[in-house]
Amino acid sequence: MSEENEIYISQTVAILVDGNNIERSISGSLNMDNGMLNFDTVVPKILGNRALNRLIYFREGVNISSKLAERLHENFHGSIRPCHKSADIPLTIKATQLAGKVDCIIILSGDSDYVELVKHLKGEGVRVEICAVEKNTAKILKEEAEYFHSLTEEDVFVYSGPKKRKK
Image (cartoon, rainbow, N blue to C red; front, top):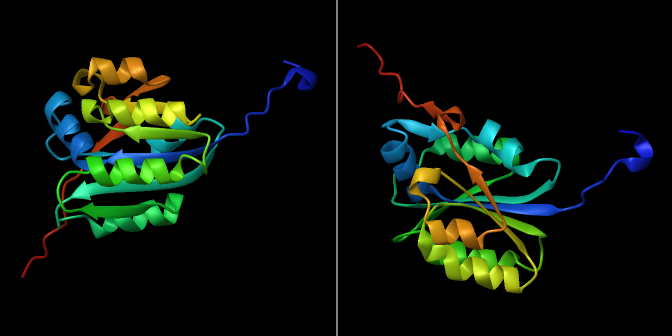
């Protein structure tokens, strides 16, 4: 392809992760009990040649890995948002806040609870993509999204936990 036909894509993207949903999908559908999403490979894969504006990992509970928080911050200027209950409401609020600031929002979740959010964001002129384990993704969510990124075993690594010291 000659340079005169080259296409430049100027899109800013926010990636919003429903951590509990993705973790359950990896554990259940991919049969990887200690599987963790490998953001170092997933983020470039789903971004393509677009610019990352924000990456936020929403997770219910108090046991959130500080190592994950550090990696997301160092590699993507990302952050983790602990949630009181499920991530649905905090993620939805953040997505609507970001709608006027980004061209595209990629939601990492297969939960059908996000269908109304996807419809709303599209109505605001935001491109909405879903990224999840296909087997655990609601059909209606895939149909409503403008693009679907499938997570596979290649997007996961097995976490062995902290090394125990010998006494």
